[in-house]
Image (cartoon, rainbow, N blue to C red):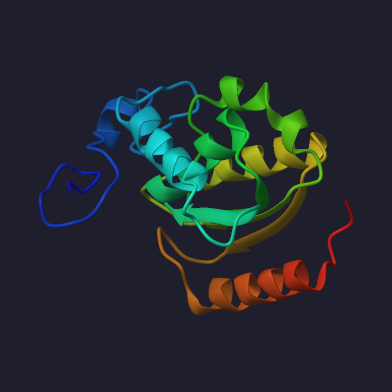
Length: 175
């Protein structure tokens, strides 16, 4: 796989030239109006896995990811009917945001764990915060974990995610 910056020594779902999505005068990309090639293909592969008749246990799953994985998980959540019990978005960003918004009501009540670093230089904190606000307004149950850090998953996020998953397991989220 190829890193998002195009080098060949990392992992990514698809090649993504983040610099091409930077508004003039900035160095942080905005993918909210983008539809990057490769994202739909990656999401369809996840959907195939979720539809696989041999997948056990059958039924709702917790779907999530980090960075591009969070974008793919969100694409699946808002463009498919895959049964989900929760969505986890770690240092992701909205992509093709208007298209996703049209499907928010289909996921009303879905628990969402959303974490993002305030000093993320790869994907903008402001976009994640705006996305959080839209999800909350649409009736999704968002657990928002902003943290002092960059494009990473610090220990504080792991602790908060474990608490979120424990609440999910206990059925503590109202439907």
